[in-house]
Length: 321
Image (cartoon, rainbow, N blue to C red; front, side):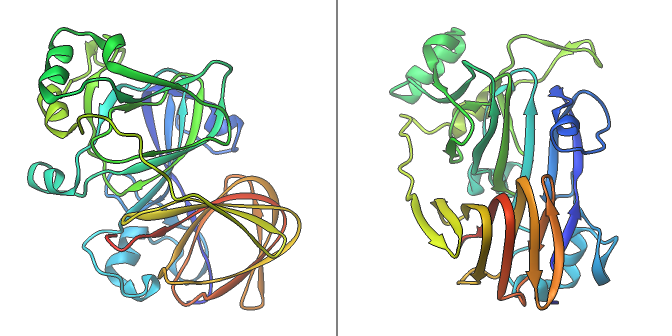
């Protein structure tokens, strides 16, 4: 298979979602409360679908199950990565995700380590990223006493920022922020605090998961050190934000000219076009690219070339994926 797999995303409505996935990316969204675009997804809660070539109409789940050669015959029961775009018209709930061991035991799926590339942020926008408790006992006491402002660690963000969010990290995307999220393929979220808001559809507050949150939170919070690296590939500026056992994440920036990439160790590559327009050339074929396009470069594609003005986020599975 020497043809890229272009994908139709799956959209998720959320209490905190908005309409910018339509206005910014031109997507046909289900409502003006659409919070998540599951752009490259092999998760059962929202699989992406191939829109070109011999596998047109099949989901990433089907390809993983029936055509593992596309992914270099990688191991594992599920496609391990998930790429999303999130539109936070309002604050997301404050939450924490389990690691692989806890998730497998309690939820029957992968844990959830993730990261965010900030696409847009209103002036003064903040994330909740980490906490101020020194021990589990202090964490539990602050939660039980609802000392949220004392517990949560707030960080300002702007477009172009990158945050790595390992499992066990208390976090929340704030109002007015859009991110591209690269994560393990998991939909397990433990909600610690939800601002006491009521879901208009049910008329009730959303469920909290206080004990699971306490169980999973890393104490004390230690901000992870990123192994960031910058280099050139042809005319493209490449930034590797992070490389972990779960995934590596890159920004590919091309302001005119061309850039030819060669596959390194990873068996396949996920790519999202965040801005601009241009072309992808593979095996003598040319494919147009524009903002909002997402695709997978399967294992047999070992070289590819970009041209134009493009900003892209790419990811590859790590050793544990």
